[in-house]
Image 1: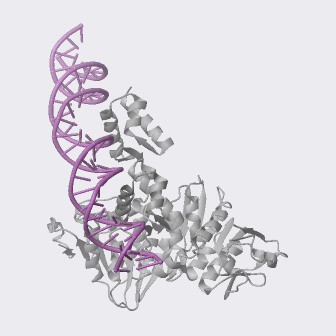
Image 2: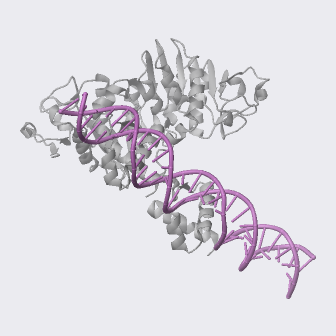
Length: 251
Length: 251
DNA sequence: CTGGAATTGGCAGGTATTTGCAGGAATCTG
DNA sequence: CAGATTCCTGCAAATACCTGCCAATTCCAG
């Protein structure tokens, strides 16, 4: 195996798992420990990852707090994100937000052969992740950057957003309940999401089990505006029995 | 077998497999190793593939091209960026582009105690880096994402850009000459930069010594529109003697 | 048709890169 | 603080790479 190929695989594993262990890589790639170490050192000096004792973690240009949130329950988020990718089809225009769950979608698209898919987002982090996917065009919304959410908001964002008619919106919610629908903590973020959801043919909400039943401050969609809910554990989902919402739980 | 035919086959194999090994090609095409190497070298210099130790990989699938460019001459870029930070003062509105040299500015701002500084950029990467700086507000321009430059461009960007009146623009150039001024390779990128520079009180151009004397395809600023040029080595700077441009060289 | 220049492919050698191994140093964990 | 793991350094073998040279072929002018 060629060195760049090997390093590419390391980065890919890193991106989808959030971290890699030297020992795992030795087993998975079938080379000596030293070779892995050398690769990691090289990649680290290129700023593509950060070495830690025992392996490496993704190098984040993003602030600590954001990276930390992203690490939380990463496997569950990745599983939900993987389900979400099944809804992405060629030719679609899709809105994706910058939630830490939605951000896990991009790595799962790497293998897919996409054509003529456009994603519009207000998250620079999402835009950057998506830039590595072939066959996918990215449209970034501008605006004032909210530092801890890393999304662009403001009147400009809203106005730009209103021009899109997405086939699908994929959003992370902070709260999901029968009465309040999908809710988030930031009003500015909510405004942008709402704008997209209103104009979307279908809307897919990602919310881990801990979000179910919780209500945050700002509604982004009422229950009947949501087509699909992807969550990670089958909790008490009877809440949503009376809606025409399709609930998908990853095991 | 004729050379063009052979090279065509190499490219075909490369396309279908993503990578080729010198040894495989020797066997499959029945020519000597040297011939294969010569072909690869030729194809590589034509930009049709990228040579790596042991073979070659498709040019289009070179991952993390942006990260690689960013890594190149990183110390020199950081030194130039450090100089540039001296021009950043409290209360300013500043435009920064997404050039790999400009990107080194953000880390140097970490220690500074800034107040009421706003940076507007069309680079999501820059926006992320800047989000970590306290006392600094970030405004991100939206638009279609150019994947290998990681910047947002398009009519929206231009229109938004025209509303700003920055105190300072900090831009990286691909070429810098007395006759053509500062130039870059992408027309879309140039349009955004030009919009800002025209409305800026002052403009600071970052260009390593290898860029001096070189002329790229699109002008972003004529010599008299540029206030400061920061470069890394004292090359032949007499070129700029007759302008009122201040040249700053880092040792 | 012919001789010479230009191009192409193959060979030899020396150099550089990559990889794995062994050992000792550093780091983590209980 | 002690055992275990992980990490780094130097070294050697294998492989890959490059340079200069030569033979074969092609091309072209005379």
